Length: 343
Image 1 (cartoon, rainbow, N blue to C red):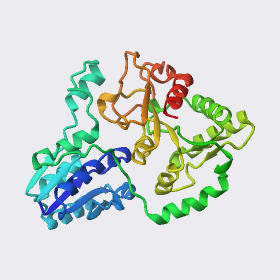
Image 2 (cartoon, rainbow, N blue to C red):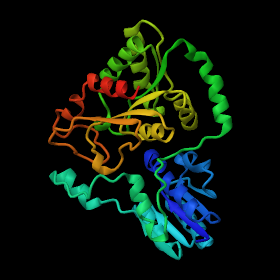
Image 3 (cartoon, rainbow, N blue to C red):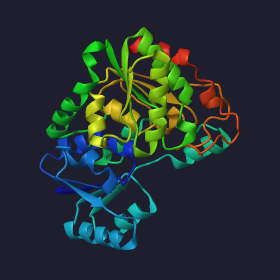
Image 4 (cartoon, helix red, strand yellow):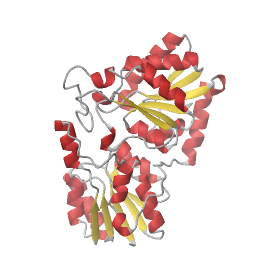
């Protein structure tokens, strides 16, 4: 195996979860060229990984760009192509790649379909996505090392954020807690008012400084949550950074947090990859899908007895039953207990 290509176009969490496989491939083939094909928007998540040789960025979703990528892949004549996306585009590249060997991740699509649509559980146990990625290369002697996902950031970003956080006066607080109230789909978001209630509790009872994380599209909602926490506390205990800093800077800022409370989202996987104490809140999704945090310093809070869970493996824009019991049933007290057990 002199040349290996890994394909995973998106999204944030899925790409972070590929890192144990990347690390294990490097351990098994220490002198191989290991490349990673990813969408440009997520390239920073793998660009600084020392276990990779290079990153191929797909800059657009059009046909011309796809053909350009196919030509680039064909020219490399890879010994092994690992398709961790298994989408229409990745299959097209895989078929035309001229790679000597090709393997594909087993997404357990049938079991997923049965659980979502008929609430029949045919999963062979709860297997994390990181393990499913590793399975794809098991026939080549690739084995996991028992460690979790990781994400790398450059020193320059770390230094930039060290200067950035000086204005927050962290020394005045006993603990720094990150809140990630956003998620791509509505049914994966805990209620904003409960994030506010928890944030106010943490500020008053734990003397915590709250950092509110999110993407550019979440900036308004995160700012509202931050301001409402400060109104309840009567001080600037909360700071919203959503839409104000880059993805790499957000990752660097996570390192200042002793604990993170997050929905089932990309920020949850980033917090795990940076080894933060983590409380993850699950609504319409379940552990069987494989995207739950696996580290010993993490807790999952979920309403286990809601019969309509799961209603989707990626989340929905509204509750199909119109009652949203999966998130309405998760109380602030449960999250507080999980936080206190980790602290």
